[in-house]
Image (tube, rainbow, N blue to C red; front, side, top):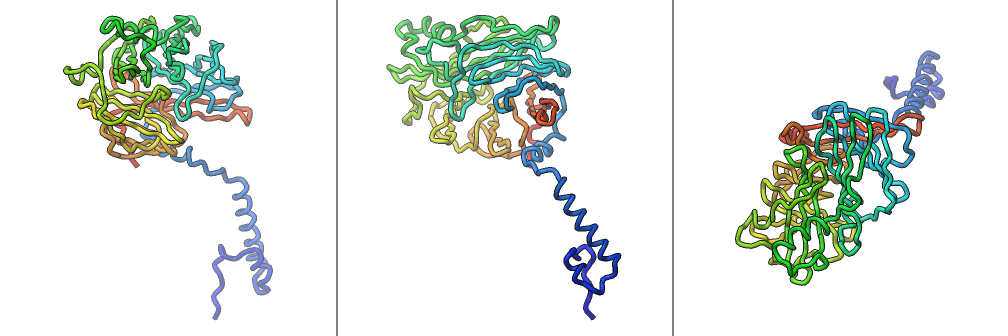
Length: 399
């Protein structure tokens, strides 16, 4: 005897052709077909970025959410820098037709903007601007912005800008000075004292990083500088306080090896006067890194105390060298974690989350995660949800 098909396998066409099927089965088949059709119509579209973010978020600690509907530009033209306080919010940098604007986003209240009159140049593969929030989180959050492609002193343009937000008066202020250029403050300050024969015009800033300090009123500015005439490389570190004052802190080459004050790499250097790279220094391991974007690919170079330059096979863009000494990269919806020497350790789902920086709220190294949720097309808000994770717990995100 021929067995009948299970009900879930009876299609509408089969029901119609089967003269022996009772009306109840035909009607059931029709209803199943309609249900499946409706499910296909109303099922949400799969979003890999959101799904990967949802895998990681249960391990993170929710901090706060802010929103706005007043800005109509795409989210990839906006950069949110959260302040590590439960009710504060953060700075919102916006790029409109290549011109910068800065707001302070607090709850659903948008303060600002401070408008910049200069076009922001773009570096392929590198951020056109990146920043770091520091100092006086309760009453006067500070934001320092760096425009990396303006670092050439020959351009005579502003390189670092410091902004603040007065919580008491709900007022966005800044920049604190009209000109804050590394070539004016940092480089000449150091070299005029140590070697008067070196001029600013003989130097080229190949890389810079903004590094958080355990003191909430200071930020470190680490630079990688080429003396063009002698092909010497200097690594210098400076400190900026909440008043915008920059002072020389240390020669990083000397701090690693007291026998010399500059680098001359044993291998041919891949850097040239035309390259501005992402420079990173780790005070824990005393390692240095430079990432450049060439021919559509990131290339990462590493040197330690010995000053021997090596290329290491990292995937994606380096987000940060963590206080642990590990390298945190971002590529294809994943966060990738590497050892200080570039050995792959683990990856985790990142998706629609992004990591602005590592900060030290209350002295604890902490990673900040932000997820933009854009519901403006439906008449809703643009949300920025902020999460935190102690850096020591990063491995808990491993897949």
